[in-house]
Length: 387
Image (cartoon, rainbow, N blue to C red; front, side, top):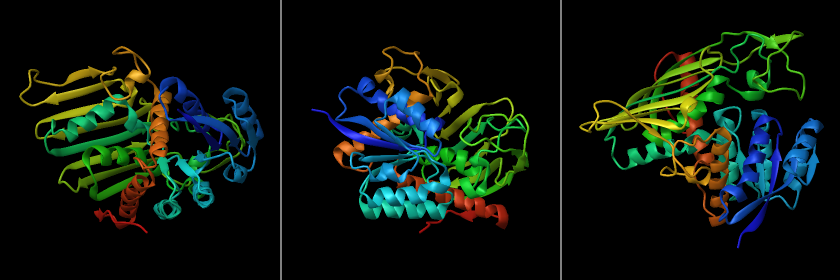
């Protein structure tokens, strides 16, 4: 018999709405779920966003004070999609109140904050989750199985990249993502966090890195409070400096001896959301690109085809059958959030920490710290534990 669990979401911009829709989809996509989300309260400092969320998603209450979400006795899960500068205070409060926490990546503005957040949640004994949603694409999970089952052999090379064009217009608005005091790093934390998490899942821990960074658009029009997203383009008005990087890249050496590259950029032209990887082993290879997320190219040495074969997502691959009954009936971005949310609720139902939680976010942050350190040292940096 399923029971309800109270959900409170903090931050009702684009991502908060995605999370809210995901919770609403659980009873439909996973009718055997042990926990049915009940959207209790949402918070945003822009009241109009809260009202839109209540009208479209059915929250019982709204507030402009995020602390009321944490303090609400009907809330068991605090879901954080607020700017990075608020993550630490919000997780501290939620953990102290004994609430489970789902926080969007990168979990804090910098590796030190991520480490403190991880420690705080662990000491409180609450379960955690992080929004690394790309790992839940059915064919990405299939790739994970190919690696685990030895189909690709020993991993020798990994390329991870996330080229996003959301900021390629020079008049793209100066949202909080472009301010170091609000976001911490730029493309490194926003995009390379996804790349590093995917690499950890598929190729294993990273030993050392050497990186570079660049800023291409030095100032942007200020975003009107509560309007638009980081995809929005301004029409004039006051401009202020961008204070974090547009691009980051790194050479990477994994602990298993594999070599590779990570590369991310937010101002690139021609590609819009190319979160992608190529993984090569002694027996085969696989490559995947979110822009064609329902396809996976696989090569096996000595197989019947002298080249890559394209697989199409379908019910044979993890999670797909909860959305569509046949092959090549594609899933989308929001569906990955539903899969992600379901795994989080399952971890709560069984009372056991799943992946990715804050520990995985901390491991990613340690890689990003080494990359950022190499920007000033101009040499290879070993990935080290923080906190």
